[in-house]
Image (cartoon, rainbow, N blue to C red):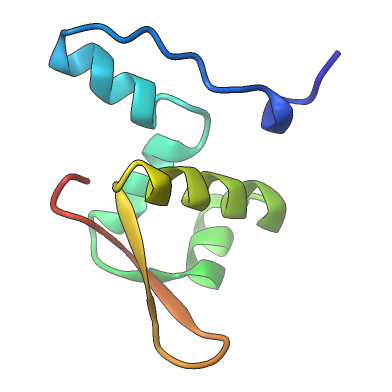
Length: 89
């Protein structure tokens, strides 16, 4: 059985805005990440600690949310970055 992280996201291509939003943030952990970012920008380590999620899974979710223009990463140094919601997020 394939792991959850390796499965491709399910896309229904509905016209309904609510259904389209769920296609983007309905994946496991995504809505919780968005919830945490509603309070303001967070570092990767802050998100990982508050969600009790593995680094690998958090990285995958943040990449997917960034690809959908829900979050953006702003570099604050060589190894430090802050994640924040975009206007779409």
